[in-house]
Length: 271
Length: 268
Image (cartoon, rainbow over all chains, first blue to last red; front, side, top):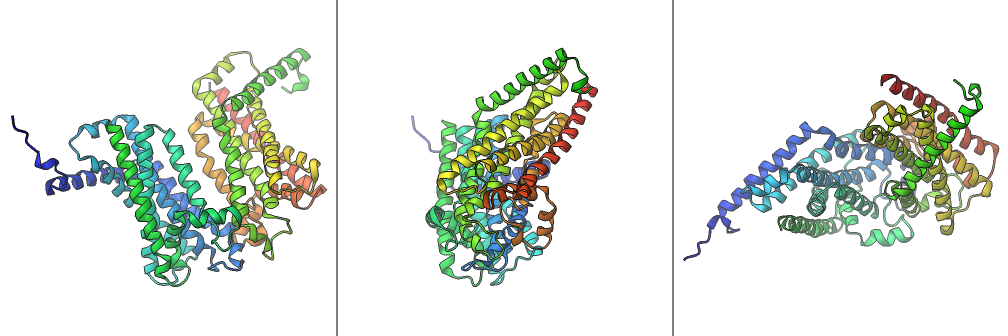
């Protein structure tokens, strides 16, 4: 008896790559269509960052007068925070949707289909990026109306989108990984709480030189601080490579780990 | 019918029923710590975060004279915790409606008002505990309440009245919708109200439309009463602002909640 190897199942086969992309694209489209079908699931992820940008810049308007604060526009400081927060929650939203699919049985049908496994992670990631583009664009437009200004041209917008997409990748990987492991809404609370706390233990509210005590020590080593710096770089003066590379490394590292966490979670689900 | 017009036997029965259901509401909170812990932990987390992030903000020219940002942040934390805690109590009322327990109570000879009052009593008791916990936990970290123990008692009373006010509004929503999801969904509204006030930062440092909204937001004045007790000391003005604003809001909220209760009973 001879053993045959199905060329399609060889990971590097071009057909398999096409099949992965096609399935991922289909899943991403389904997820994006759900924005229209179930707006209540997406609207909080959109409205909260808009509110956060406006509310934080209004509430903490006075802190821009502190010595060492890098801008005199509070909205320039808080708009990038709101976009990063909104982007990460766009990613987590995919985790919530996956929990719904797991609880409703749709995921079992997906796993029984011949769709390549990696498409089950790649598709939601593409959907999260789509959601993130909507969130970052709307928060930026509202922020600009509220007085935010780019300080070094359109390149600042590019860094804002890159930081947003990076946080969205991290949120998606984290959300999917937890969803696959818990398989119910308990995961939703953990997803939100951990990312929320992680983002606030950074230079979210004040720059490192302004903050004091324990928070300074934590924020200095928190890689999310670098991603926030990347998001803000176009709003606080000239864009320098020194303010960007840390964020890019953090996105690559945390994003990679988060997606690995998701992939392993999916494998555990299959077992 | 007013309580005074009732026979003493009926009055005693209503009080006994209210007490029994209040005890149930309070025990339910104690037995499900997962539902109440966030409203204790989150305000404390934000105080810790705010104190480290905005510690130097006390140097701002318009910032009220205060020993540390921790003293400034206490009042905001109390109101924040009480708002979230009151939602938990109203959610429990909505859950009673969803599970049919509310209907069983109506089918029994229980006083209708006691169904509502007991839930509000639970919210008030929890708010009192929350306020004390916040003060006790923050004392070792350098908190000083200038108004002393009397000031703390006034803050506890203010917290309980605020819980009554918020619990009343949320209970009205629970009675109207009969949905715990709708009550939970009102959380962002309260969060927005809180942010559009001076709960986290002084109004003196705000400007423009935002400052005007914070000026007219009753939460600002409520928080500032308790804050004055912490950073300035005991004064009639601070006591009045802490108790009268929350008390006034509570009276309005109870009226709305009773109206909703009557409507729900009439609709049955």
